[in-house]
Image (cartoon, rainbow, N blue to C red; front, side, top):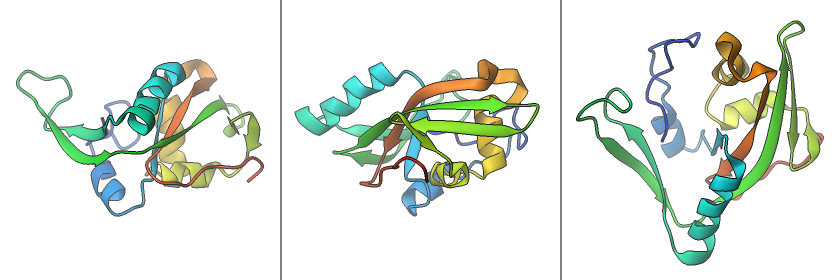
Length: 150
């Protein structure tokens, strides 16, 4: 599921994310999620067992009564990488490790996820969320992968 609007606690609260358009025109090439182990099982089913990764967005308020999901795009292949981010609010410093290697070009990570660096930090660490640490998975919709020390 991709969010159609920024959450109420975000710096752009209620405004459209344009994730759908960014995905369709190639500016959003991945999505970052928690629950690495669960997602790996699902992505492996897509890659090895003929399952389909269906990227969707809510047609209204998420989980609202009578609100449906709209399919944006489906994939028969996807990639993934494990990642962890640590954010220090005092210094406004965001550090990232992807597949065990330090990754320094956080602005590119944010852009490839469909956001600016400030939006990205706010999305994952705004309003005291995640206590400064976020671990999960980058689900790639293309063959692009990150290498360490970029």
